[in-house]
Structures are given as structure tokens and as C-alpha cells.
Amino acid sequence: MRLTKQTNYAVRMLMYCAANQDQLSRIPEIAKAYGVSELFLFKILQPLNKAGLVETVRGRNGGVRLGRAADKITLFDVVRVTEDSFAMAECFEDDGEVDCPLIDSCGLNAALRKALNAFFEVLSQYTIDDLVKARPQINFLLGIGDLEPRPMRAQAPAA
Image (cartoon, rainbow, N blue to C red; front, top):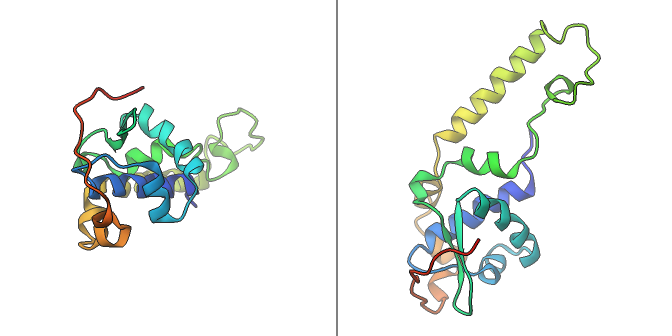
């Protein structure tokens, strides 16, 4: 199984926001830190916002912040929101077009389901906070200490 770039950068965006927890994070700053386009991050931002993993604050001094505490956002939460499919084989797909006589009694199907569930279980054990705390120099590495201070605003999140 291979996760998409969308999932990869969604995790990175959340890590950035967690490391920059005392301020609103701006997409241009996050894009610069990771060397990725702002447009790509805006695309990723939408499902994260809809799922409540981030909040956006509009306006001149607006930005992005975590929608809940970093220790309450698991990697499984992110993967579930950003990945379209977990079909590891044709028989996992829900389109009803599987043409296999073993579909209901296949050992491969059962083994793959068990592996996928184990994958999800491991992802559920790790939070964004775990990833940030594992890198004590994350702020330096992301250039967060170089940013001009912007206090968090208590404004209601934009939809």
C-alpha cells in the first residue's frame, strides 16, 4: 500500500500547525517550509477543515490552526480523510463488478482485510503530537522561529 502525496502533506501541515501552536499558520509559510505549492496545500486544507482537523480564520491576519489538540488527532484520522480508497485488490472494491467465484470464501481477501485492519490499528496509536515531540528541533527545521509573532485570535472559524 502506498499513501498519496495528499496524505503525506496533510500530516506535514498538521505537524506545522502543532509546532506553531501559539500562532496562526499561513499557507504560504507552510508551503515554503516544505517546498510545495500553495495551491496544493489549499486543496488539502478543504477536507481537513471539513473533518474538523483544522480551523481556518479569514482576514488579513487570518490563517490555519488545529481544530483540536495535537494529541487528539491520530494518523488514522488523517488517512481516513485524505485517502480515497483502501482497495488492496479487486475484491475490496464496492462497485459490484468482481468476477471471482471465491469472493465470499477467499483466503486472500481475509488476509488482506486483516493486514489493512492492523495498518489502521497502528496508525490509530500515533498522534500528530507524537510526531512533533519526536523532533525537538522541528521549529528550527521548519523555520518557525524566524516568523514574526502573530497572536492567535479568538475569532470564530470560517467554514
